[in-house]
Image (cartoon, rainbow, N blue to C red; front, side, top):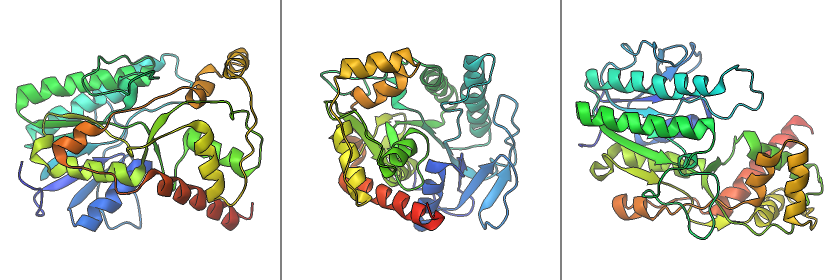
Length: 327
């Protein structure tokens, strides 16, 4: 695939206002790529080429958004819902993540789009690793609705690519962090900042992470690189970290001492199970490592921000935000 450039070769980004989307849009602008943001509702005060498409699903009208688009980067998805209110969560995951993506991909291929970059998840591989990190060739073992829907979407995209010739590139990141992070990582920052004792000193695990700017850079590489076509890549910062060390580094970035207490992991897991938080504690005590050598060897991609620097920058961002709020 030739490098994308020119006003007739726009890059359409879905999920452009989200955590990863904002980082990607900034990176695309810095590189001078012409882009278009697919938005749920109109946005003001922004000079980007926007297309309002409403909610993403099997009936979304993509006609205007896909005009003169050479590449689609599909970030939008139904992710983990903390306060689940749907009567059938799996059906919702499939409606938005699977059927919504199929609709977009088929419309993109029909409109002449040459490449479709899809942000999947390491959850396609599974939830935990033991002796070996996950690799692209491993048999997928998703365990929750989100991971299952991502795998089903990957499989559908490969069929669409075979039928239409549109190149598909799939990225499976682990936990994404960085300034502006939300979700569980933000809650961990809040606990550390409040000086709440965390009974995690006895945890001996290893987890892979990826800084949001590194992920945006990997996506940029997959947009342009001819060798990326048809490939699936696991991506990470290239360094794994234990939960206690993660807490120590984040605390250091805030200029305070970590408050880590020893506690047997089995006792932590038992207590979490009793209060319905087994999955939450498993993310803190279990290991989840990925082998990101394939994207390095195939595309020559390397993470630009080292893990230590990324964690300190994230902690400093949070600390400064708290100062500005007066809390």
